[in-house]
Amino acid sequence: MKKRRHAKILELINSHDIETQEELQTLLLNNGYEVTQATISRALLKIYRKKADMFILPVKRIITKTQGEQAEYLANQS
Image (cartoon, rainbow, N blue to C red; front, side):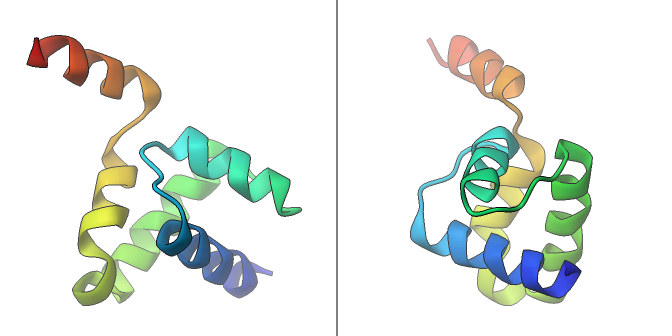
């Protein structure tokens, strides 16, 4: 199950402009994967370590941004 979920995460990252773990969680749910944010965070870290050369930017961005952090970042850009 974990390998399929990781493959789906990579598929979604490559086919959508995902900015937060919450967005990824929603997409996973829409694809039949009911997972917690903690599970997504762990999966992204594992994927990032294994596939850093191919997925470093989109995965790293999603690992570090929650919606709250994104809102704070945008507020500080003004």
